[in-house]
Length: 242
Image (cartoon, rainbow, N blue to C red):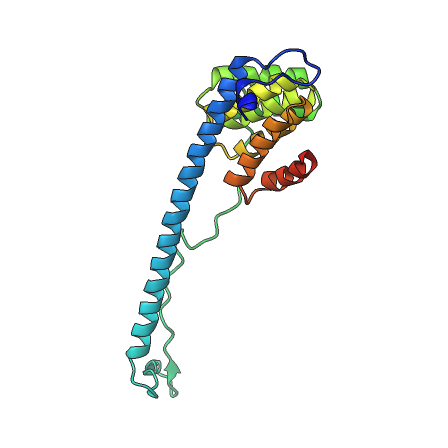
């Protein structure tokens, strides 16, 4: 493990990994461990709240049962009142007054999604993603890089950083993809795409011949995000690394 953390030489590479890579990777794993701690705390709080809700439901159920003595039936609702309209010989049932439906009660009309205006964050992101889908990887890389330079704090920035890494990955530029995925974890640790980024990092280290580092990243992914599709794929890859 010390060799891994210190930067062991890749098989056939003839040189050690860059020290900066090791520092960034260690920092990323530390961030993931912090997220793991936060997730455990949140799960514990949710478990406490769930238990409190169950107790409240039980108390309400007991209160409802004690409202009437055993064997006694709940009082029936009074029958509807009879009204005799003027000039009619037979009584008719009065209809309960029903207020007209409010705006909140009506189902909202489905509106077509408007096209993002040219030059907006969404339009720029969609254009970059379109380049990637069309297989123009270098154009996609350039567009995602411009997007991140222009909108580093955008809600789409985490996704853009992830797809930048994917663009490098499908281009087989594994070192650039590795840097992109590591930077995603450091800059956008709350992104929902972080498990996928860790999975690709594990794949990349395997392709670069660093099986120990690949195993370390994939095991951390399974540990922190056990209920994700990325964790399932990581488990399969770990089987081949053993």
